[in-house]
Amino acid sequence: MSIRTDLVLEQQQSCGKDLSGVESHQESIGNATLCTVKIGTDAAAKELGKPLGTYCTVSFPRLDFVCDTADIINATVKSLKAVCKTAPKYALVVGLGNTDITPDALGPIVADRVLATRHLTDELKRDLGLDGLKSVSTITPNVLGKTGIESYDLVSATAKKIKPDIIIAVDALACRDPERLCRTIQIADSGICAGSGVNNARKPLNLATLGIPVIAVGVPTVIDANSFFNSDENMMVTPKEIDLLVEKAADIISRAINIFLQPEIDIDTIESLT
Image (tube, rainbow, N blue to C red; front, side, top):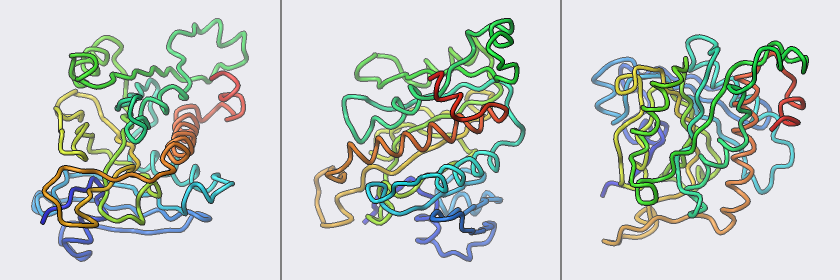
């Protein structure tokens, strides 16, 4: 029986950690653990069912039990730096998902909290004492069933118009292991296929389809019901505290993205502007 997962660590566990063509490294950052997996060969990519690239996984305790998230944020920032080849001067942050469904609302909430600066003139930045502010735009494409437009089409059209150096796409993911549910952030340079975690995959957002590097950031908020029992029904399970968990995960990711995209600006200043 195949149980869906978006997490490369779970795929690696299924295939065996010593898979040829895969490099792994793990380190601790306070109460967070950062595991970096590099898929370097086509054979390994096929075996894992994941594209070639670098995958950073930040693992941490249950967010409803964590008060200080500084270590998780630092590990997420470090992961963003690891998968981004060069420091972007202009970024587009895409919040994928559906705000009407809490487990799928992560992306839009994150995008809403990322500081958008593209509209600020150089003169205004100087007047504010923020000369080092990088250009950032955000969009929330929503879902096909509500807009009648594929997310890919909206992201592609926006990217062609504003020409960012990099796209950061944030989405909810699916996992197999309950211990990873809302306790993992995966950051990858291989792009993202929205909806794949719930077996509703759309056209992928990646370098090949958009011509721009795409960094995928996600948190598993649902798990296949077949992880618990054998059923022919297409069901996904989510924690009862999902409102709080999505809220805290969105806060961590948005802060990490703001720190990564605005390295010259203090995070307190950034948050005062959002």
